[in-house]
Length: 392
Image (cartoon, rainbow, N blue to C red; front, top):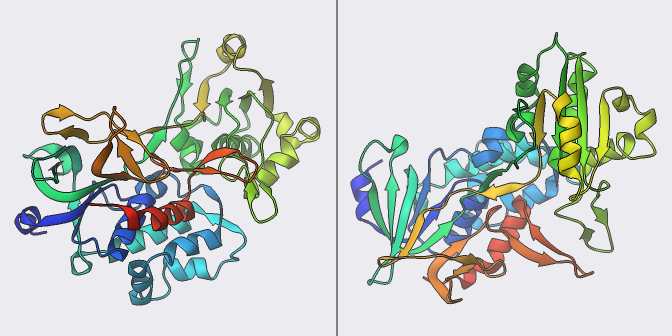
């Protein structure tokens, strides 16, 4: 890839991460003529969206993916240049007011990623950003290790550093031993999940949580228990009643936290208190209602009868490059309205920005409820608003 010429070039921005937010950041920087851009990722293939969640039904309407795809000129040009049929035309031909599968959105991300290349002012560097230092020359010096980390890292100079580093599922400590964890990622992949559970011996899988992901896992397990895995049973631990996104006058209540789409419909038809006892799901699922105060006691009581557990309790930021100002380590706090960062004294860190699920936009709905906006269309809308204000 001509690493010497890449290394010697001065960049307007280094963007770390090539998931949906990283791609949208690159597109919006190009829109503002902030090029050349060094784009750092270990795969350049759609991030976790493509790697783990292709089998997951989206909770986003197709028209929001189209908004993302048409959000900046670099994306629109890529669509025009792509031979049809392609990921964009597939989405274009779907019902725009219905949801689709994550795979269709992931294919769009990989298509657009492939189209942003050196002639467009984008230089892809496979590897991992290890650390970044703000220098006396008033720019960032970013060290990137090559794939595998076997050889010496390369260093790149840039006016801006944009972190789109993503998140991963978290788990919490449980007061029992001898229970095997099934990660949230494989639990959201029905074909993979089916291989992790024995078909001919009894298994009881605990699911902790009531988020969109948790309900998807419950549905996946029910589908297995009611078809190929006759000995499978489920225990569902939840602290609160199910919460749904609600269409209001021109806005959506619980837009980022409530259940949506097919998953919401399945939950209403099978998991609500008044329908679960008569639902076919109740043949395989036992609900354990708990609270923050009593959940440890409930775990002690119920988990010893379970063979496995899936925790769908949230996500944690992935590791970011070590940040320094000269020789001093920077401890930074994200400004979720501007996309910038501040140091421990509240001073703006020059040329440092973030976006995506790790660094989302804080939004307040008309009733004063605060949420964090996560989703392809929301990443695009946030970046279209803030990137024009980003300074080198």
